[in-house]
Length: 350
Image (cartoon, rainbow, N blue to C red):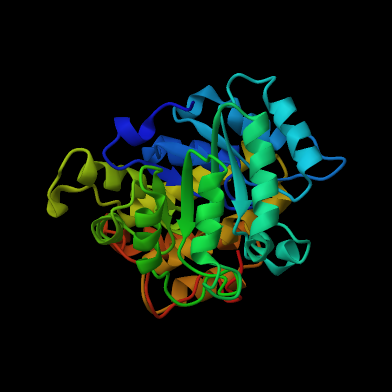
C-alpha cells in the first residue's frame, strides 16, 4: 500500500495531472514554493508500442520533490496496461498508479479512452480488474460525473469501487462540459456517501484555500486536487496547509505579492530550460502559464491581452515587468480568486 497520506494529513492536497503542464520541471517549481502532499504525472498513453517514458520516470524517480508521485495511465487495452504495470514494478519508487477515466479533450476521448470510458461500465470493470490483479500497490481512478450526463454516475462509482481501488478522485463536471460552467460539488457529496470508507478526493474549481475549505465543508471529502489554479497560484498548497494543518486565521495565511509572481515566472523559465533546453519554445510555454497567472493579477484584461500579443521572449518579459513590478506594483498582493470576467482558456479544453 501507499503511505497513508489520508491518515497523516488532515486534508491532503494533490497536484492534478495536466497534460503538457505537470512535467517534472513544473513539479519542481511547485515543490519549491509550497509542495502538495501528492503529485500525479501527466497521463501515459498505453498502446502496443508504449513504454515507461523518460519524461514520466524523471518525475517518478525525483527525490527532490519531497512528495510521492502517482503514475497516471490512460488506455483501453488490458494486455498492454498489464505490460506497463510489469515495467513499473521494476522501480520500487513507483508505489501508486491511477487510471484516467475523465480526460475531456475530444482528440483523446474519440479514441475511446479517458472520459469516453464513462459510457461503458463493463469496460471500466475489465480494465480496473486487470490492473488490480496485476498491481499490489495503491490503485486509484480519476473520473468525471459522466460523459454526456449523469445517468451512469452511481453505476460508474460502484463499478470502480467493486474493482478494489484504494481511492477515487472526482472532477464534478461531465466530459462534454470540458471546463465550462461551474463544477457541481453536490455530486462530490453524493460520491462521498457512496464510497463509504474509500477516500474520495474532490476536484474541479478549487481556486483558493477558501474555496477548498468550502468544498470540504460541503462534501466531507477526504482530500482535494487542484489543477489550473496551481498554475495561477503555485502557493495554493502552502496556503491550504496553513489553513487546514496549522489552523491559521485567514488574515495570517501567506499572501504572495506580484513581485513573488514575477520570480515565479523566472522559475518557470529556468526550470523549463533545465529540463527542455530549447529557448525557441520558451515564449509558448510561458504564455501557457501566463494565461492563468494574468487572471489573478488584475481585472481589466490588459495584462492578459498584451501577453497574448507578445511576439518574442524579450517582449513577453517586458510585459511581465510592466504589470508585476513597475511603478511599485511588486508589493501588491495577488487576487485570492481569479477574475470572473476573464477567461484563461477560451476554448475551454484541457
